[in-house]
Image 1 (cartoon, rainbow, N blue to C red):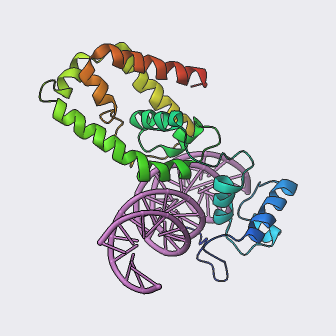
Image 2: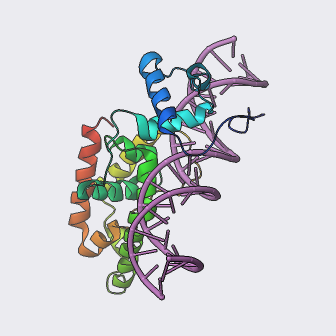
Image 3: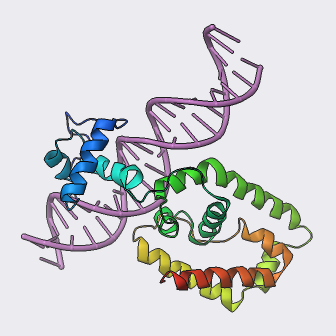
Length: 201
DNA sequence: AAAGTGAACAACCGCGTCCGC
DNA sequence: GGCGGACGCGGTTGTTCACTT
């Protein structure tokens, strides 16, 4: 199928948004809403493509956006949800009110990825005394199975396209818990299971 | 003070899916 | 049921800024 050209149209501005453009976009959306992103820039008198407007609004101009540093709780939540959901940034963002998928994605790649990798390396070295595979094999609890199902459902509910992402395997931060035994994993699973239930999935 | 380097963040791009015609 | 426009998502790139040499 032929894809309609979007941002490559001649005459459309690219690059950083100016305060004036932000003001125009905010005013227009507050007045008329955003039923049609494609038509919006023309109606508002912006030399931007609809995609660019949408991104700007969703990631920075929405009134409910929470700016500033991530709290420790938010960090932990991202780490855990990423372990469950993988790179489903929109699904993760849905569990963090005021945070956007782009913000979380950036935060992951600049901060948390290294932490998760360190954690994984640590678990690798620990695995000589207590192999992860062994732990996982013996810990394939009912809670774990439920958790996988819930995570899958939650992911499907919030996003539809994602064949590209690898299967969700909690090797990263879960592995450290794995080395401590099954009970903690079960508790962890139960916690996140309950969280999903409470949030409606 | 200038150059180099890496981290952090903003924005763009391509693709898959949805949905109306 | 097929087509095509629009939207949303995730990956990637570009830019800015802070820090080091």
